[in-house]
Amino acid sequence: MDINAVKKRLAQLQTSTTRSTNLWKPQPGKTQIRIIPYKLNSDTPFIELFFHYDLGGKSYLSPTSFGRPDPIEEFADKLKQSGNREDWRMGKKLEAKLRTFAPVVVRGEEQGGTKFWGFGKTVYQELLSLIADPDYGDISDPINGRDVVVEFKTAEETGASFPKTSIRVKPNQTPITENKAVLTNLLDDQKDIREVYNELSYDELAEALGDWLSPGEEEETTTKTDTNVPASTLKSAVSSTSNVTDAFDDLFNK
Image (cartoon, rainbow, N blue to C red; front, side, top):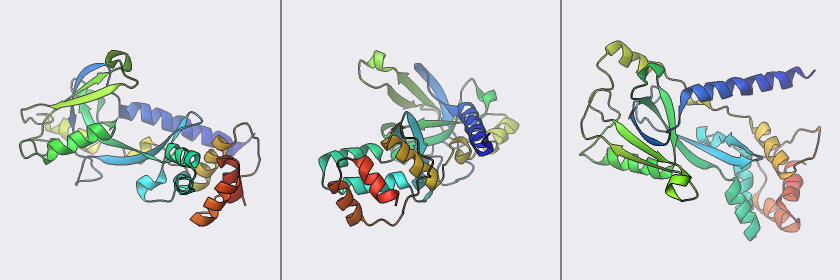
């Protein structure tokens, strides 16, 4: 039995459980929530993370979220510089996409504690614009902030390809709660977002990329990525091979 494989799977299951209990996703209809301060950053309640989506049906947190190198992002950048249109499209697919999170309290479910709400660029820009508006200000303030009504419509409801999330900030300033003990618990009992999303190592991400580019190949060797591959070298390799899988093998498996 491969004990390391067992430990890895256990960590994945534990991460999945942590994620499901600490994330909030709006359901169809309207839900009233309160964005609250993030205990690990007093400057802003918003946490910007970058993800690689749909690589073999999986999504991966990019280490660039924390200022660390990311082999998938590096490979995507190189592909976009190859001068080949198909390479550029592949690079755009591979590049990490922004997803912003904020700690929230769901009205009527305060006993469930603080959750993380993840949203896209449109909602993020709207929230930032509201906070920058002096008529609203810091909507996350524990005493003088404002609740937010989140309306979620499915793709079937909108008739579009994707669901739609819209927000409306309540006009009245209200405290998160009148109960000081509950308030303290909501503000203090928050997870580090890195406990919710598992950050893989550089080599693990490189291996995941290699597996996605070469599905079905059973190789015992571990993919080892050279972080210092010059752009000119990658460009030459990409243009001289028939597909990005070969380019990956030529450059990252030496």
